[in-house]
Amino acid sequence: MQQRIIGTLGIGTIICTQAIGQTTNSSKLTTQDLSGRVNTITTAVPFLLIAPDSRQGGMGEAGSATPTDGNSIHWNVAKMIFSEKKGGAGISVTPWLKQLVPDIYLYYVSGYSKISKTQAIGASLRYFSLGNITFTDIVGNTTGQFRPNEFALDFGYSQKLSQTLSAGLAARYTRSNLTGNYTLSNGQPTKPGTAVSVDVGLYYQSQKFKINDKKATASLGLVFTNIGQKISYSVKKDFIPMNMRLGGGLKFDLDETNTFGIYGDLNKLLVPTQPIYQKALDSLGNETSVDAIDPATGEKIIAAGKNPNVSVAKGIIQSFNDAPGGGKEELNEINCSIGFEYWYAKTFAVRAGYFNEAKTKGNRKFFTAGIGLRYNVFGLDMAYLIPLTQRNPLQNTLRFTLTFDFDAFKDQNGDTPKSAD
Image (tube, rainbow, N blue to C red; front, side):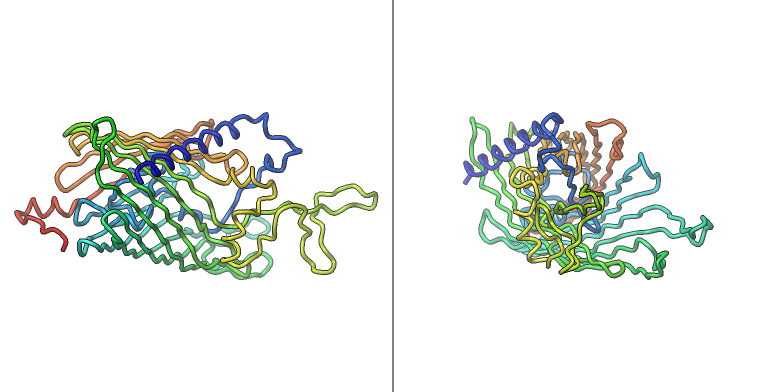
């Protein structure tokens, strides 16, 4: 099993390397090649995909197979039961898109508790404040002020299936209020969007084994997140960011006080890709910028790809083979993350990572760096995002996370924590 996990990490690294090579060389993107066409996948409530904490945020946003902590319910709910602690919690704050808007923040509170040797429960709340917007009429007169916001509330359960394997399930309620029931200029009313979804995860953590005389632990995670209903603010319904995350990791005990881990994730959105629509012709037979309409159905005529207006179940299946550019574009829809973490005496950590998204699918490419400190009950983690392009809206993104160790709290109060039974 350890060889399979090492192989998974190797394959993920190869895919990331190939994707970096393909997407950073703009000469390979031609107008004749559909897979080189910019075709970013968009969904409603994208805040559900933002890395909420500083630990994983400092490791390139890899998290499906990283060690368990208070934020595990976001990354892979199945991990919670493998915690070395009986419980923990964290509070995170992330100023978001500081280069564009000064008052957008993501707040995240999460925690878990082991209720037995084989079971753990967890919960989290994320709140996304989108600043202030001003509504105006057609001549520019102010008609109102509103502070849009979104939040998601999660409850999770993790169960050990064996000494090395666990499964987890999390239920999520999401509410997105972007307009404050504002009526659009066409007279159409709006409303807050709500959605119910689930996460389903698997997590494998090996027993310790040796690599070059160093003790090591291998991990593997697979999780499907935000699997649920579409969301609507008026009439039209949109997919939420259903996602598949596959990752692996290796953690080495270099000696009694030094540990080092390497982790990687592959992410793919499980929502349809927008097709290429056929363009209408003018009276001279020249192509226009207007999409052609099939008079028999009243629908746009698809030149390449598949119809994205499908059910949730069909959309998940279709997401693996509906890119208009074929297999190459499907490969470009996989985001890659790789990260490293070094701990000294379980009190000080240094982290680094890299995140890669194809040029035609959003072009998010950035390095991350982070540090962590642990002292008795409390811990503090910080992460900094370094984009590869100038004037990137993610530039100077700094995350802060304050963690709490329930076991250490009991020790401080003279109550030796009992192991979960």
